[in-house]
Length: 425
Image (tube, rainbow, N blue to C red; front, side):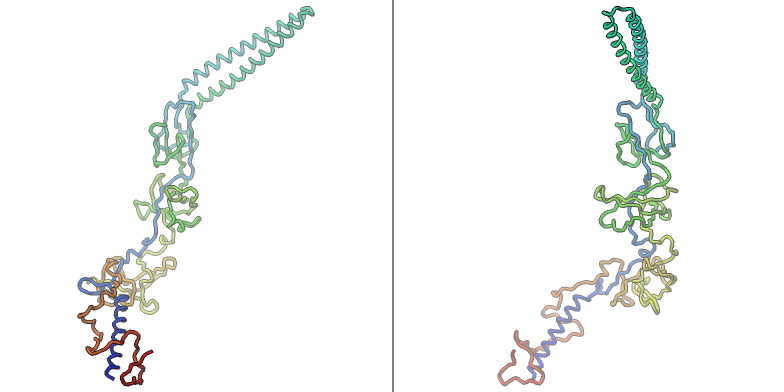
C-alpha cells in the first residue's frame, strides 16, 4: 500500500508541476524591477475629439486652368506678368515683337500696288489688241486672238496675286493690332515659361507659355495609397483643415479618386469645395467628416474602457500616486459613430485609464509605456531547476516516492497486484 501511495503522489506531483508551468507561461503579468505587477494606462485626451482620425496631405488648386500657348514663329518682346500675379479679363500678359511684321506688311503693300499696276496695264493692252484686231486682215486675226488670250491669262494671274496679297496684309495687320495677348478670365498666374528661367508658384510643370488658375471655386488635390484609398468614397463629406490653425476648417465632398494615372506610386484624389478664405497653393489637411465638428464639446471616452455600464459605470483610472483605482463616472450622450460616451463627471483630459482586464486590481502600479504593461511569456526553461524550491502553495515530491517506468500505469482503486508481480497493459 505504501508503494501504491507513493506512485499516486508522484503522478499528482508531475501533473501539478506541468499545470504550474502552463499557468506561468500564459498568465504572468509584466513586473517591474521590484517584482510588482504593472498595468498600462493611456491618456483620455488621446481618445477625445480628433484622435484616431487619419489626415491626408493636400494642396489647394483651381477648378479651371487656362493654358496660353506662344506662336513659335514670333518673338516675344515683353512679358508683363509673373507667377503669382492676379489678372482679370483683358489684363495684358505679354507682347510680341512687331518690327519684322511691320516690314513684311510694307513689302506686301508694295507687292499689292505692283499687282494692281500690272492689272491696269494688262487691261489696257487687251483693249488695244481688241481694237487693232477689228481692222486687221483675216491672216492676222489668229495672231491677235492668241495675244489677247495670253494677256487675259496674265490678268487673271495678277488678280489672284492681288487677292493673295490682300489676305496676307490683313493677317499682318491683325498680328500688329493683336501683338499684346490678354487674359480671357479672372485668376492668378500659375506659371510663366519663357524657355530660360521658368517660374511656377506651385512647383508644377506645364508646356504652356503662361498658365492661369481661375479664382472662385477651388478644389484640393491630395494623394492616397493602397492603405487608405478605401477610406475615400466619392460623394462622401470631408473636412479641409488649416495646417496653421486647427480651428479653421472648410467643408465639401470627395469628387474622385484617379487610379488610372498613378503619380509617384500614389493616386490623385480630387476634393471639391468652396473657396472662402483659401489661397491657391495653400497646403492643408484632408479628413473624413464624421460629425465630430458638430457634436458637443467635452470629454469623450471609448466605451470599451467603461465597466458595469448598466448599473454603476466606472473606469480603471490612475491615481496621483501612480496606482490603479476604480473610479465611478457619470455618463452623458452616446456617439454611435465613434462608439464613445461623453463623460459628464469623474474624468479630466489629463487623466489616464487602463483597458479593463481580469488581472487588474486597485493599488496595482501603472505605467505609460506599452511594453511594460504587456503580458510577459515565461518559457519552460524558467521552471525551477534541480535543487531549487517550487513556488508557494505547491507540494514537493516525497523523498521515498518512486516513478513509474515508461509504459506502466497506476493500478485501479481496489485492485491488488499479485505477489511479486505488477499490473500492466
